[in-house]
Length: 200
Image (tube, rainbow, N blue to C red):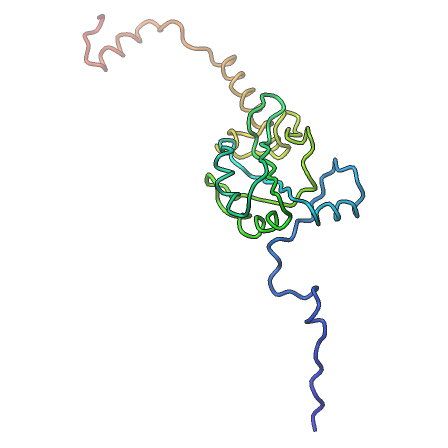
């Protein structure tokens, strides 16, 4: 007689999942966070705030209210701004009234499209004054400092590439002066091609 099949009790534990939870925060930790790893985990377990990234510079606060209010009542939205010129620079913080609403947002809003961009949300321990400004050297986000591709929704070239393009334009202007005088005889050729009479 064959032995009875053994039941794997690990199937009953939380460690075994077929589909990962959609409301699980990422492993990212803000390097400027002052607390311990344990405090970080505790703060995330009760937070009502989300960090939202990969936004277009042209996405408005009204658009954000429209999409994020579908997950629950919003307390406030803090737009991410460039330190240099105080214009939107591609991120924001969304505060709900309850932790459950923040989790709902991660389930249903994270990964959706807004202004042709995939919105990324993550639990955040809570907004503090000063965090609304980009941390890049140019005043915007660090990711936009080194971006090499042209991204119209995030201001065009990355900061470093924009400097390279500006230097290239400057060198072109220095090395290739505009023609101030037309060489002798060239006027005759131009007029004849345009159907005019030579010498006129």
